[in-house]
Image 1 (spheres, rainbow, N blue to C red):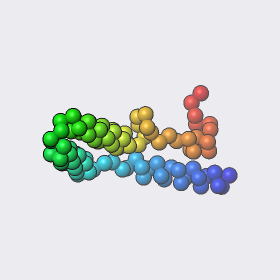
Image 2: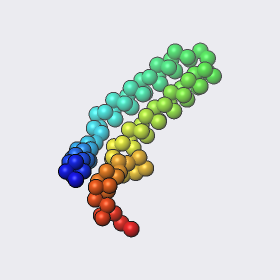
Image 3: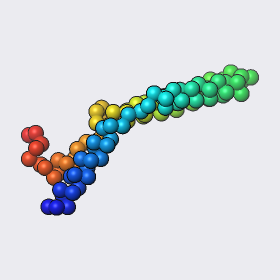
Image 4: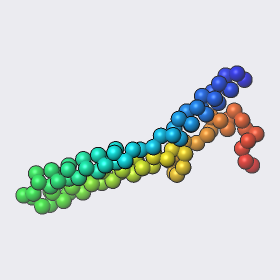
Length: 99
């Protein structure tokens, strides 16, 4: 029982720490500037072959889009489709779950 209580308290502490985290606007700005500069560089390198340029820029832009969505989904860790659920706390305190 003491181990379960300690586990619940540790899980609660981690959830409180996670809830205070957010992604700084500076990180977003740096990510977007880096993505833009890389797209410009790729475009300049492959400017002689338009087909290759389009394919490579589409691949890189898709990767940047996926990275942005992934970072944005973890910006609020307790809401949305990818969320940290309180399963460990509910295992310790099953009487608090809704039927």
